[in-house]
Image (cartoon, rainbow, N blue to C red; front, side, top):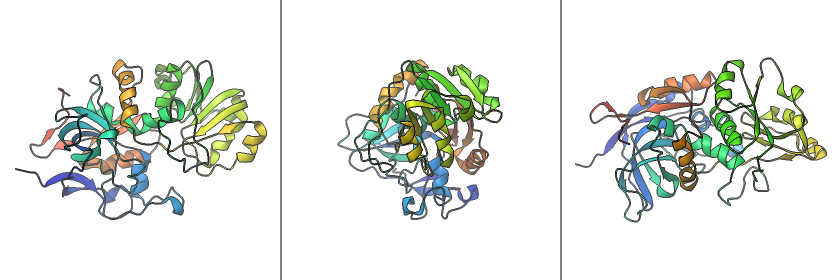
Length: 352
């Protein structure tokens, strides 16, 4: 018998973590070009809480229209249970991971905090067999962000954040400073830069030093004790995973011709200073890409890139996961685990 409802986390208004309600929701229907995934785990990302609180972090002109109720979230790992008739790249039983409809789904069309999600097949890749669903779900948005900043943009969509397209720079033999190095994007950026042959300086709070050195950081700065912009000069690239209005302080650390990549560029006002210093400031908006997740999968499989899990919560306690996120100092990723409501069992499947 066809299942009409599933469990999901929905919100009926904007607000704090308490607006996230675990409840019945309609089962998604797959459209042409899509696959239906039974979700085993969900990765949390900043856009999740931007949506939850009404996009307060964004300028009014950037805030999408939202119709309630909405299901937040973008990052999933799970098992394909059905495919549209025009999809021949995946089949029922495939273990997959994906970032769903981003940034097009910023108005909550991604719907990842749920037992089932319909996903465009072009955004799906096979999950690396060597990692479980929790770790796979922690990868897509943060890892694709680091990848698209540092390795390859992977698309030709117009950059809405600046007139020109973002262009990664070669990293072999370069000195790369990663600010916010212990977080989701940051801990992937450290690993990617090291893999590419860069000398990597990681900036985070002192409690994360051993963690980041284990990921490959050559040097570490505890920003609570030392301002990195006062300590370093002649850096080739700063990847600022924190960004915002203070990102311009890193311009003074760059050599002439160096580059500053702020992941969150809103509030940056140092364009004239950058031009005077002969430095590049460039950013981009991460976009869903099954092809890039497939390209990255062997690196996850081999352990060349590792996903660090800060904490895991059951889907029904998504509010607690958001509370954890609000406290900051996250090491890697926060994930949700999904229980199959039909039998009450954890849907993490060792066979996948």
